[in-house]
Amino acid sequence: MQLDERKQKILDAIIRNYQETGEPVGSRTISKYTDLKLSSATIRNEMSDLEEMGLIVQPHTSAGRIPTDTGYRLYVDRLMNAQRQEVTEAKEFLVQRVDRLEQMLKQMAKLLAVNTNYATMISGPRYGGAKLKFIQLSRMEGSKLLAVVVAESNVIKNTVMDVETEITDEGLLSLNLLLNNNLCGLTLDEINLGIISRIKEQSEGHDDIVEKVLGAVADAIRGDDETHIYTSGTTNIFKYPELAGGEKASQILAAFEEKKQLTNLLTDHLDSEENQGIQVYIGEETSVQSMKDCSVVTATYELSDGVKGSIGIVGPKRMDYEKVVSTLQTLMAQMDLIYRKPDEEN
Image 1 (cartoon, rainbow, N blue to C red):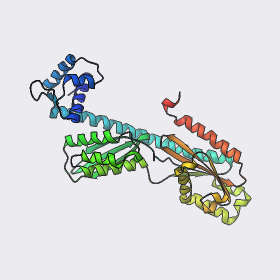
Image 2 (tube, rainbow, N blue to C red; image 1 turned 90 degrees about the vertical axis):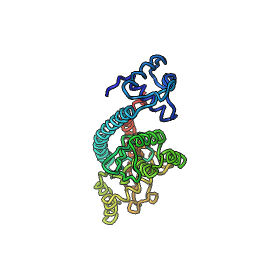
Image 3 (cartoon, rainbow, N blue to C red; image 1 turned 180 degrees about the horizontal axis):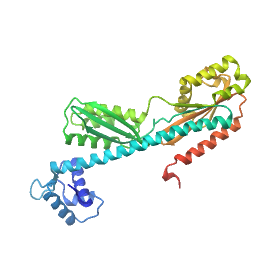
Image 4 (cartoon, helix red, strand yellow; image 1 turned 60 degrees about the horizontal axis):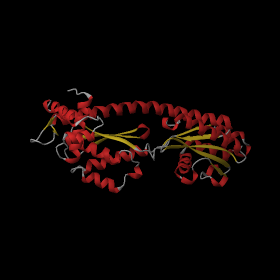
């Protein structure tokens, strides 16, 4: 069944208002509720048409209208189709973005190594401060539900859940609306116990589903637990006699090979509020034991709100600090231009 835009908006407004109040919805309420700017008389005519189409019903004389099962079905199908399309588009965009970002980070590490003649390391982005965009719960076979969680920068988490309690299509729709109304636009830190308690109280006995969805939300916002590290220029270490000695060089190269120590170094820098921006660690100041004879310069890059990563340059204590800092500042400015949001360009 196809509706024109005006009828669709009026039907949507009736359903949303009825979900909120549980009371029949009149034309005067709809005139305030929609952005159509129509008179009550025009809305009454449209509501009469919707009633003839079997999408809404008047429970008794002089009352407003409530949605029928057919009206709910049309609303749910349209809502789910729109969200599935958005998820598909987001996934396609994410795949392209990840591929481009990975290539860019690899090229960036190589460029820094060539320009500075030092060893370089770059961590892939983390999404700790990203906000939740939306949640979609869909029915699968048997007693399973699919939870699709989308966070900022189109980070997507798909989770298949076994549910302990049966849920109707209308209940699933209500739960979708409840979760989105309470959680969308929040960061993980902002989803507090008060919000969780309110959702559970209004979930009509589906606490188990809410718990599992919250877990999927946490996974999506945190992003991949594994931090990817891209390195380049490790052989530049041999250009400096004070680092090229057998044991020192082998320990530094081992750190670059296994990457665990580099991951800790870069994530520690990223997690520290005091160490944001460009920082210089000389000798014993670095946390990596094998780099105590080196200097490490780190910087934070940010692709969007809450989506951050770290860059590190490793060289001898006599490194050209002015050149390294200048190179990193230039790189940060270029990344800012590439990833700046459209509304920030003016």
